[in-house]
Amino acid sequence: MIPGIGLRMSEITRKLLFTAACLILPVLWGVLVNWLFNLWQSARTEKTEDEPVFPDYQI
Amino acid sequence: MKFETLEFVLAGLAGGGVGFISGVFGVGGGFLIVPVLNIVLGIEFQYAAGASVCQVLGPATTSLLSRRIRLDDFRLPLTISGGLLFGVFAGAQALESMLHVGKVVIFDKEVWLADLVGLAIYFVLLLSVGLFAIWEVHRTKLNRPLRRGWLTAWHIPPFASFPEFDSDRISIAVLAWFGVGVGFLSGLLGMSGGLVLLPGLIYLLGVKTHQSVISSLIIVWIISAQATAAHAWNGFVDLGLVMALLFGGTIGARLGTELSVKLRGPKLREGFGWLLLFTSAMIGFRLLWLLLP
Picture 1 (tube, rainbow over the protein chains, first blue to last red):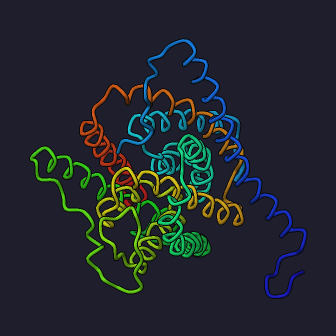
Picture 2 (cartoon, each protein chain N blue to C red):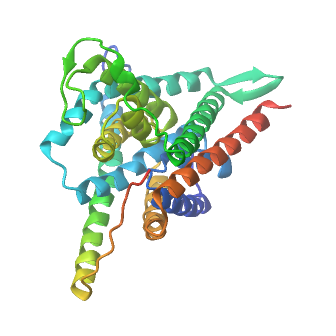
Picture 3 (cartoon, each protein chain N blue to C red):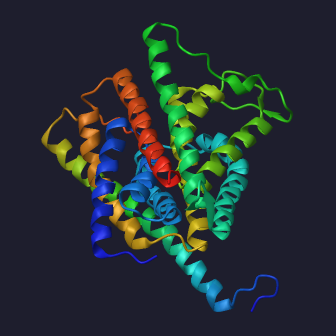
């Protein structure tokens, strides 16, 4: 038990690991999606010269 | 709170719908996910807020990677981050404190304080930003665009200069307080902050529109990471729910983006304003339902 915090070491480790997983998983998803879209766009560029521009933020 | 398979499927579908709207209007969508999860699917406010901030990290990472961000682009967001750090922590702690209070009795009816305060702030915020968006489009149509940089008139030392501003003396204190406000809303409500960041950066601070988008993306990423850490530490993040939202949201956002290229900017901004008003009306009805006997 850590004095002043009132949490066991094992509980702190579990919380730290869970927090890290919550941060890493969605970021990995974002990296994966970006990689897939890059692959898809390069495949489309090979087929056509007129690549449409997707504005991802318009407001 | 334990979730069933049906809830994951429904969350995935809801994520798809919200992602589609996000793709059409080019906004984050966190402001829609929390009300949809809480009001439509009945998921408790703290879990809806936790899942919302955590899933935003996915699309925010994709958006950042797809742009060529320069080192200099981080100066303004990192300066605002001083306030964000404190704001997110204070917002998450406020939510935690309200959960400790538990239920309160209003008009002889027991309601969760976290639900009541969270939804009430959402209602006021969406109503205000929605009305502002419609007013801004109306002024633009009349060729009377709004003045920008309302807060830059406050000359509170210390000062710094940033390439994003026309003025060469910007108050660091004003930037920090702006960060505290955005961070608090994000920590409390589980929104990425993009909803208030973009109009805030453009109209309150007077940042150039193109630069506002990049700064907003960086700040959204920082806020989401901080808020996710705070909510995960408090046990309010369900990773299954997050993955369902990410999966549905990615597909929906892509379909929405395809549609958005066919629509014009002012039409989109006006539609976005009406979307906010519709969402605030939905929250208003939920509040009445919570309060009326």
